[in-house]
Image: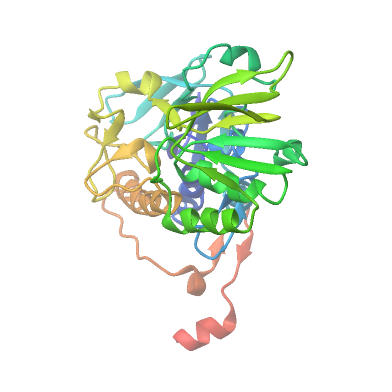
Length: 349
């Protein structure tokens, strides 16, 4: 039996940052994740994708963000159960919980924080003949290593942030990047849309809308694609086809835990992101509430407030006075201490 203060289900960015916030409160964390390594989608799907909305980092690769979060939380000595899926939850008479994985590993904690991101996910695939034949032969749904596209002719299809961001990123790597979208309007960030249009004017990206990729050609791997635009068809030479139509999320076994679910997400109270089950919280992309934004930085905020409530549940009647780390420093579980800069302390004093 693995015992901890806060059991975190999901080792993506939000789950990893929870370790740090809980550690400041002297609360121990253990994380469960079905993937074999921490980082969630940032590690498994797009480790080389740049992220632009992390405070203090004008640009950071998703994989590097994971490394930084692991380093930040390392001083609080979190535990990990990786490559196992949280399967069942049992509430005990003392209001603590036992969570058991699909491999039978049991975890006991007074607080459960579900930080499962989008849950288990599958890429949304275009309806095309022989699509499965070309998977891993030029058809990719995720970009893990952009270097494989160096000097290649790459076709991306989609209208969201991933399609825009990867078109921009690969413009300096691939021989040719072509972005197709079935509409003239994109769903992604306006800044990214403008950047793609600028790169089109510079001749670094071929932007074709409204249009769709309707067929794939090639004997052993992708060699060309049929493009349909305004009822007309033509064939475009290509080495890689990357349809980025988003993910189809599923909560998996968590959906059977008695939680209040709305549109495949867990409803929470925005006071502290607690679910309808006292002691069980949901933070990050897995939750839903009025005004919800599925952003990593929002998950960080939710994790911070959740930890404050977790502290009160674990330590009833004990008051905690919030101190800024610039003043108090950080005490690790290993006995190490990072002092606040003296100049900062003196200025505040």
